[in-house]
Image (cartoon, rainbow, N blue to C red):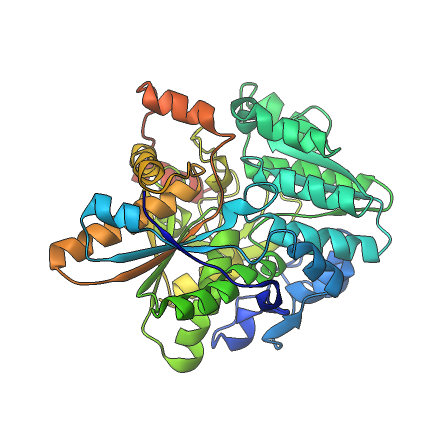
Length: 453
């Protein structure tokens, strides 16, 4: 194992988040009211989300939004995070490429999700909220929100996708340790949950279903708001601290990335690493490739349709413009639970539609092959989600070797896999398989959603 770290100081933590929408020529289409099909207004969102977050969500003019001092003080617990030159991986691949990764696994909860959990909890507390609800797939977001809610003295209920609730019991334990209530979704505690259990008695859950349950509980609970860990604009905004730090660190390394890569579920860690570098492309014409790596079993960017769709299974949310597989999509039970979401965030979807970024899909076995090579080369066991980015980075490095060209690759290590060892056990035992949607499955699912565009 051989690597080199590029470390920033506390003073280098960003003082403002980067709002890419301000620099986009084509702004994302507005969310729509499902009944009227007219754009929603801020006041339509205030009953569900904290006002400060809604204002960030709808801001299309300010490129820089100040980070509150209390939020920045909490960031100081673990930020800035290291940028690492992966010499060990380069050697293992015998590639001329230079491979760097931003290590977000060093946060107290082991992933990037805390970057947004803290400001979301902060803005809820500023409004006097006492209870919050959310959903979680693999558990990283739920764990982050549990810690943030406890810090600000709020009660939290987390609907955890049922397959992950059982696959990842220690994520559940972490949330409970921080004081959150964790419910396997779908559950019998909400109408949305009861409806889907009635329709599919053995259904193991999806993020779309868990969102429905969390939104329903928020609506029924006094002084309660809903928070979420991906897809929406304000979440992408908070995560840009990753890429803003990485910009400075790449300068320290004396290089600039030819390609920036991140795994993709709804878009939070992808946006965090990619948007600050995309800024150079949008405002300076910089030649840089941005790549989202998603599961072959949940290929919304590579095989989905750009369409207005609900963000949840039950249809409680507004209609969002997105690349989608349909809000009724039933995902395979892969171990990258954080990537099993049916749609992509509106900003990312518009960027993809405009050709400003690329997407690749990766099979489950390729991700675990990449994960074990990375672990043996760099000494870090990555989360199954992050391993999609590693697999895509390895593809880029192998292509550089084939062409005999030096290429600078930057990817985001969004989290560690130390609580995902059950998945590694199954991989090492040869029990994991690949899952892939057929063209017929994709077309059948998309045919069931209302065609608005």
